[in-house]
Image (cartoon, rainbow, N blue to C red):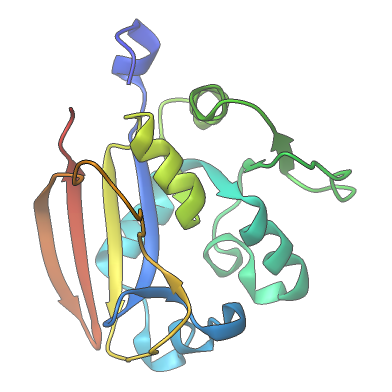
Length: 190
């Protein structure tokens, strides 16, 4: 995060995701049925995230999947606001959509989302965008809802083969709600 005044008064940049116990945020074929089970219900942390979110910064894969699943609207449709999709191949936005496509450097995409968030949090969806935010040292927190299921395969929460350094985190919250376990971490700055 920069040292300018806008950055110090802005909300946080938070990676918000749901993960299986074995570390996958999507199952084989990008399946998400395991995370959308009705018996999982809302959590206090999830409800607070919806309330505090001013803008979303997502990856192109998330966007493409959202086109095939109407239930993939941000937070099941309970949140409305600007969504920025980071991509090298921007399509035309759908008519009447609050989706905008951004290209270029991750720091610029985060700055665009921060401006639109108007002092509220920017939520990051997708592992590629989250990893880019980590690499650029602009991610402040990670909120993970752990679902009691073992998928065995799919899209990993985080993978960085050949990494030269670990990403240090400080757990700031641990909560249970029904079958879900919420873990919140602050990203330790380099």
